[in-house]
Length: 416
Ligand code: HEM
Image 1 (cartoon, rainbow, N blue to C red):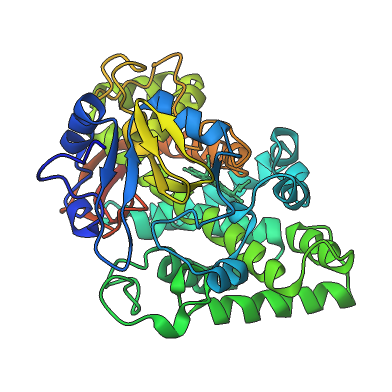
Image 2: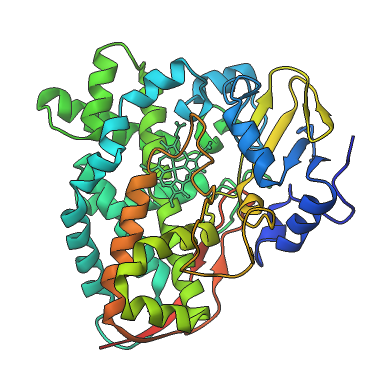
C-alpha cells in the first residue's frame, strides 16, 4: 500500500488557509497518485486520488465507487446519519436518476438559457449598486456573493429580501470548518447534537423551516418554479419530507457558494494577468471560453468522496471494500499529462476539459449550465465598465479542505 508522502496532510483544513498546497498535489501525482492518507480519529483514513485519469475512472464506475454506501464528504457517517442526511448526492442509480429527473429539465442548457436576460438584469443591478465611486470595497461581499443568490431567489421565486439570510445559512453550513463563518466548527467543537443534519450544522433546522413555509405557500397557490417541482414530487410520493428538506438545502447551497468563488477567483486571476484582462475587454466575445479557464483555475470544490463496494485495483493499488476514496478535482485540473502549462492561467486555452463540475458520471453538476452562464454574464457586464482594478488589501480564504473559496477581496475599481 502506497502511503501519502511525508509532510503532506490533506486532512487538516489549516493547510488550505494560505492557499491550495499545489506543490503537495504535484508530488502526489508524480510519486503516489493513489495513496493511502491517514486521518485523525474517529475517521479511518482515505485513498487520495490525484491524477485526472484515475478521477475519471472512479466517477464513471459508480457501482464500484458508490455515493450511496458511505457519505460523499470526508466525515464518516453511521447508517442512521447517512439515511437521514441523504440527498441526491448520496444516492446511486437507479434511485439517483429518479431524484435528479425532478429538476433536471429546469437546469438543462435550454432550461437555463431562458433566464439569460433576467441574469443580465440582476448582474447590472448588482454592479450599479457596487460601483458607485472609486473607493475600495470588498469584491466578494458586493459582487461575487450577490449575483448567484439573487438569481437563485428568482429561480425559486422567493423574496429578494431573503437573500442575506440565505447567504448566511449557506455560509454557515458549507464553511463548517471556518471559525468566522460557523459557530459549530466541525473539527474543533462538539457537534454531536447536530449529527443528523446536513454538514452537522445547527442552521439546517432554520433552512428546513424556511423550506416548509415555502412549500406551504405553494400548496395553497401553486407556482412554476424549482420549489414547486420539489413539492409536486413530494405530493407524488417521490420524495418524503426529509428528502424534500435535503433536496432544498442541496440546491440552495450548491448553487450559491460555488458560483461565488468562481467569480472571485476569476477576478483575482485577471488582476494578476492584466494582459489577459485587456484581451477580454477588447474582445468580449472571448469571455465564454475564458470562463472555462476561470472554472479550471477556481476549482471551488476541492474534492468529493466515494466508498468502494468491492475490492478493486486502481493504478496498482488494492482498494478494499468499504475504503473511502477521495478524488481531488483541484489536482486533476492541474494534471500535467492533460493540460499544457497547467499552472499557467490562459483564457484562450482550448481544449479545456477541466473537471470542475465533475468528469461526467451520474453526479455531474446539475447547475453547470447555470454557473457558466452566470459567470459569463457577470464578466461581460463588469469588464467593459472597468478602467482599472487593483487589490486594495490582502485577500482572505475560507478555512476548508472542501471548498476553495475567498471570503474577502478588497479592491479599488475605477470605472469608465
Ligand atoms: C461554479 C459553480 C459550481 C461548481 C464548481 C460545482 C461543482 C459541483 C461538483 C464538483 C459536483 C459533483 C460532481 C461529481 O460528483 O462528479 C456538483 C454536483 C451538484 N451541483 Fe454543482 N457546482 C456549481 C454550481 C452549481 C449550481 C449553480 C447548482 C444549482 C443550484 C449546482 C447544483 C448541484 C447539484 C444539485 C449537484 C448534485 C448532482 C447529483 O448528485 O446528481 N451546482 N457540483
